[in-house]
Image 1: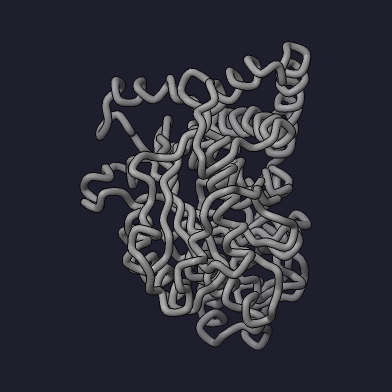
Image 2 (image 1 turned 45 degrees about the horizontal axis):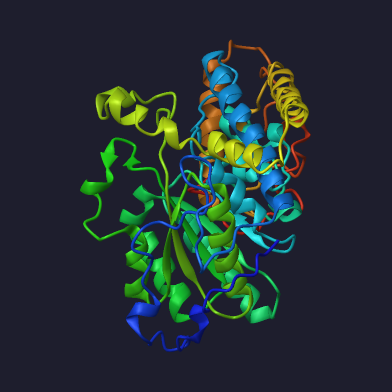
Length: 424
């Protein structure tokens, strides 16, 4: 889904050379905002307000995303999830990232972008397979055009650029949207991805969710640039800043960037100014590096409340619709609870399946080492816990059968873009 805008296209800047007026590449002095903190429309001549249908759909996804975040956090406390990086407070970024893409486009998410992945159509239980620790990825990236969620910082940006470059070489109508956080901009992979994308003029949009902290490191200790969007200028691509808690502005700004890439305008960088309302993960104590007063200051900027206030004032949302959306979100949360309420008996040897199309000698060696450790930990004469006979040294370390639980991971596509043995 794309949004037509009246903005002067940055593609007018000579693209292949990366040259052109610097001012054409610079982001806005202040983040773009279309709905202010009071829920009122804020006119911007460059970016039109999305239509009512799009805003209502986005609001429905915001409500669902908030409930997903809260339920997932509860499941972590119950021991049903190993970890959950919450996007509470960042749901507008999540929803907009998925909404501006067409079916043939690709989304490259991070570990914090579960709501974006679900908004792309992936079943929540499949998304949570990774965070539960059951499998490398619970969904088939080719089916949804969503790469596996990446935990290493910025590695997915390189993979996204590779897919975008391949699409350009093949003449495909494909745009790639790659998400990252502010912490990822301090990584070398960030530089390499943006530089390659600009030099080869590929159809990719880099989307930074600047939530002010790279775990405990504040942005001021990461960069002294005027904004992270200003970094785009050094690579010869346009940058833009947007209010990351304003779903309308996100839809318009990201939509314009995706449209520009699709029309041959090349890569661009969008920085969303938002905030992580909860801890980095359940293993983090955010009170050690930020104050309660700071967190409270962002409560009034809540993306769900802001969208609701606007839609209510515009006569687009009433009590009946609100109740229906809340019921749908609660049903989704109930399905998550039920689906994760079943214990699994994972096979440790499955760790080595589907890493490569053909196992490498090193992978075989690692598999044999693990098999030996498992054998030494079992009582003498007993069969392995999973009921399978022990393999002899002559047997291969990898098996062609499907993964535990029937998860639709990469059986048919072992060369899944955006994955590596390090990520898995």
